[in-house]
Amino acid sequence: MLLACDIGNTNTVFGVFDGDRLVGSFRFATRADRTADELGIFLRDLVERLPDAAGPLDRAVVSSVVPRLTPVAYSAVQNICATEPLLVTSDMPLPIAVDVDEPEAVGADRLCNAVAAAALYGGEVIVVDFGTAITLDIIDARPAYVGGAIFPGPETALRALTRDAAQLPAVTVAPPQSIVGRTTVGAMQAGLFSGTLGAIDHLIEQSLAELNWTNPTLVATGGLGAAFVGPSRYLSAHNPDLTLTGLRLIAEFDDGQ
Image (tube, rainbow, N blue to C red; front, side, top):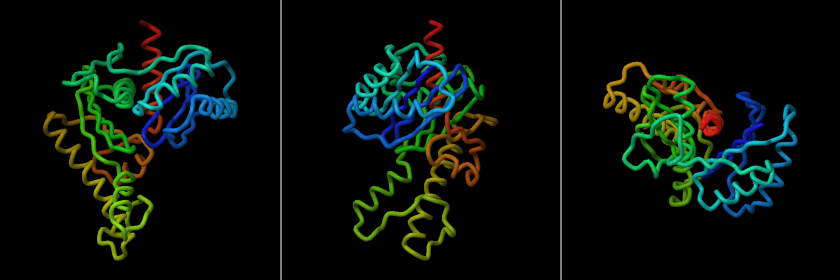
């Protein structure tokens, strides 16, 4: 069985695969001060709680966009699986091309999303990943990852607002009852949610025009992704396990090399 680990700036997600079946997954807050021993104990306990985890964990793959935690997670996963994990990087063999000017700077999570999108949907795909940053990942029909866009997610924007504007409270990022907020909370929700939605749809629209694509697949992933699929003029699907699936596919491709 395969243990897949995705370390993001806000959340860390682990998944256990039996072949191509995701047996279970769990998400918890990323903590930069976590030690390998602490993470290993926590992770082992979570894995043991999975009801369908029948076989031993004999393979592992890790992606991380938090350099401080990369060796921590690597060590913890290595101890649990008793094998050397595969660490996702842009210079490793991948099942898709990475056709950008600075491939070494592409985040491991974006590579995983691109690999999964190419395999699951084929053709031309745009992935919108809702995390600490919102990323648009664009995959053409070759398939190749050809770039995208990055901007702050609504929860990141909210933290900046409450930190730098003394009278603004913390609110829940949710669809507003009205664009014309009649309270401070309502105005903030309108700005955070609808402003993010407008930015996403505008970026997708401009990307499609620049690429001259007419019928791509447009998929959302990440923590808040499901909330934006309905209101968006473009996003048509939500796949919460896209990054984990990409990790599995990269591990399988590496096995076949």
